[in-house]
Length: 201
Length: 234
Image (cartoon, rainbow over all chains, first blue to last red; front, side, top):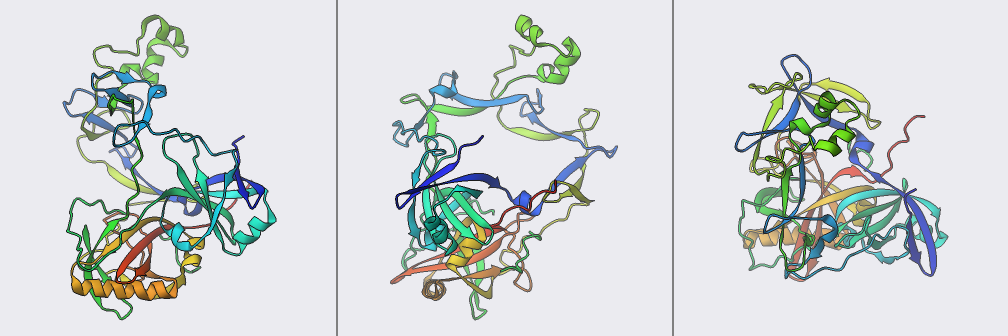
């Protein structure tokens, strides 16, 4: 069974089971399927640039190689900072008590670039904490689903639907001042109330 | 940065620029003092795939793999894969020389197929001819973050002194009321924003922050509410 999210707040510990929520689970999804002349689904494959082979599913793999072209086993890889120094390993936070920070203003959560949303199910939750969440307070805690080289952050939020953890990394918007006008850069990547219709999206 | 036409509460629009807010990049992986490159490589040719091995050696081909490594073509396996082109194979495995027809399949939240139809093209509604409009629908910041998943943020930048004042006024208004305003696209200005053809439609909430003469104006994008999936019927 997956480990729980364990949180410490004002000297008490609460734990939550969690399940990832995707947009498809809420609203469904669309999929485009290519069809051949016979009306049957066809398969998308890749042709190598020299035309020498067709890459079907299962024919490629990926990994790290040194400058001699030698494969580096995953267990030997470490995180490297821009100066080439090793970065400390950040273990998984699951099952380990994490200190809650906050309450935070909404602005702090607005700065989070959300990668994942989890629905939380209280296993053993302190009433002070659930009361604060029900009243609209927001807390944060360190979150790493699995150990890696970058610490993640999660915000704990409650609403009429229950409790949620929004996980991601925090962005820092720039302050705009009168005499600093950002130049155009056409390489920039620009993707992407109850009666707001999210079904239509 | 890209240009966007942005409308204020009075219905006046101007052209400004926007860019996605950035987070610190993840640390690269490698070995200390030994730079590493991430590469995709050929792990097997078509004779090494499961179906080909079954037809050559039968269902239980494990011993054949141990004895003779038939899945490894020593001349090809391990080759780096660079640029590739997309090719479609018909149901019989032949290369198609004409583009396939495409059908769009809609699945319900429970994962069941609901409809098949010709693909619907979704046109962009953000651009020089399509302002992002102020709907007037304002919500407290705390209410927005508790109701919607805001997964991406675009920062709005001024392009000259006039647009600095224009954006600063919007940011100040929203900052002082601690509110965000829903922005919309399309003719009526209420549709979700689509930044590129067939891109995902997004609800957009404008947030402002002000510190003296400097400001931040942020367009937060959402394509989902913060809620639980409905329980699947047993």
